[in-house]
Length: 313
Ligand code: G1P
Image 1: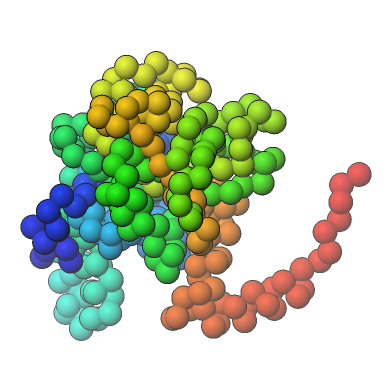
Image 2: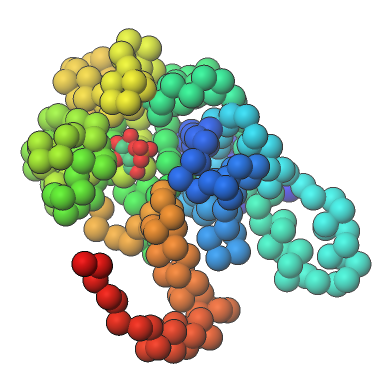
């Protein structure tokens, strides 16, 4: 089986590699994540990580590097063939389920590298240095799902091609939540594209430079690797990708510097904590062509009979 689009099909100079860090411990979902990677938690009937890999492959990023850690074997198994299951479904003539099982194994060309020490997102990206080499590449974080109807990565890839350097994605957030994200200072460039002048990882509440928050999609110049090697541990004692991007934003273009951002206004779903995960599952289930109608009917009934909220004294 081959990927829908392969590196050979890609236009010359196109970005084809994506690094997806999946080594996190998923402590916010314990005990579900005691023996199961959080990336394998199903959003409706598909593991969260599969949505992300499908988004990558749809954007032409068919060379996927997953940066894994201990206890992540289930992810490798998911993207591998499952002979017994295929055979059993074939014998039953269950073509529909067979198609669903096969889908996860024809996605891109998937590689793995281990992070070893959990030293932060910047360190996870640095683990991809050897695989990526000296070309621009994408980074995707598994907690963010982007609706395929609002393609973000293709736009970012186009911006990177035109401006060079690196490209990040920003959303406007309520200032009260800015301290939960990387935050950017920007200057206008064109329509929904801005030039990034400064970045701060999870600013102290009330000190964010703007309400523009970094989300988990990046197209990076390979100069990021050298910068990451020199980046001291930052917020939480971890090597932060945001800190390395701040350095790149201040570097000349000839050295791979310059950071632009796409301000994304499309549909994005967060699976990072339990409440966001529930919201995402309900939103996506209610829009499914196979389940949505019945599920929406259930939701209407369910909401109608909810008791009114009683505020605590
Ligand atoms: C990471 C980044 C942060 C970004 C966020 C988006 O943080 O470090 O800059 O805003 O992803 O989801 P994390 O949520 O992994 O702590």
